Image 1 (spheres, rainbow, N blue to C red):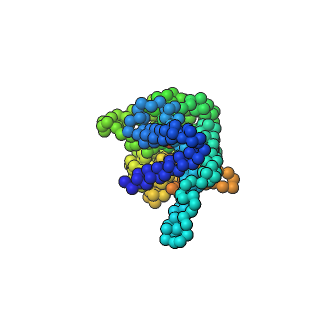
Image 2: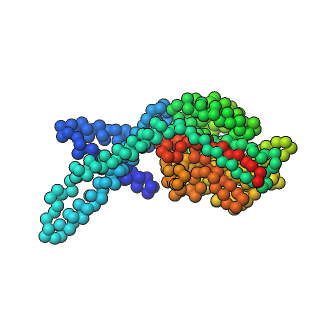
Image 3: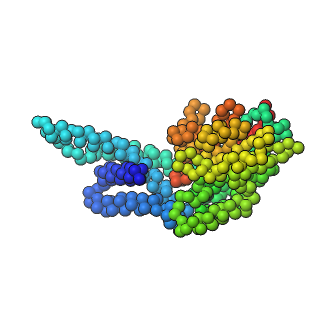
Length: 406
């Protein structure tokens, strides 16, 4: 209960200071009209964003939802910059007033009114993140980056030397508003002639019907050994209000049917053997298992049954926290794990000198390849996006992992 109160308090402060700065550049004759526009837009965006999970997702076209989401995120972050400029000034003025009250010194001549100069500086500064966020929506939301990684294993069967795996994760179909870039990237994936395609969860935001327009597109994905998929935390419909548990169960049934209709092999705490030239590797797929508040549907012990003697094991598990919390402790013979979930926060810096994202403060492993002993984990930065319909610095990813025998 405390978290929502703190969030609403922060949001109210952001909007209050946003208005205080905006009104310094408004002609006094237009102030009344501007006040209604500002607060009307503020309340509309707040209403849409925080009633979405209860009923609006059923009725609002995704393009309209994307527009509202973009507006909410861009404006809220820009006004946060304004707050960071102006709130410290109010603290200083408040201290000055208290000192003046208990001394012979007169109160500051301007009282606690807003400095027009500082407000304009704050607005000018806030324009920078606003422009950056808009760029992330327009230029980067569908700017797919193919990332290629080779990993060597001493216990990899010789027949699988050079085995090419394409990993997709976090499609979040309910956030898409464009098809053409997705059609093109599916063609590029197929052109790589992968041995196996894996999908590591979060196909949708909330409901199976989000895939209606994209089922045919992703159904075109082809690999020599097919497409193997698992569930992520968003795939269960846990984040929306259902009329009944029966309705929720029916949605999940439809979700599983989507995988089947695309020809994807959805593993629900199961495993599969992939055979090649008389040798095999095992692919283990668990339902979502997340640390902390995220649901723990995954049953790795069950999924592991029957592969104990397999010489090489790959695990698909949506949330990378699973690796440290359970996999490395209890299953040291799992050679390679694939995850997603973090999106790399859809924001950060990645170059040859620096790799940083807010995700690193929540997840020890948040993007790319990690190694502990003989075990490896690859965390995909995600194919789609959620909430903020864009990306800054951390681009949407198609991962190509090639296995080699050491």
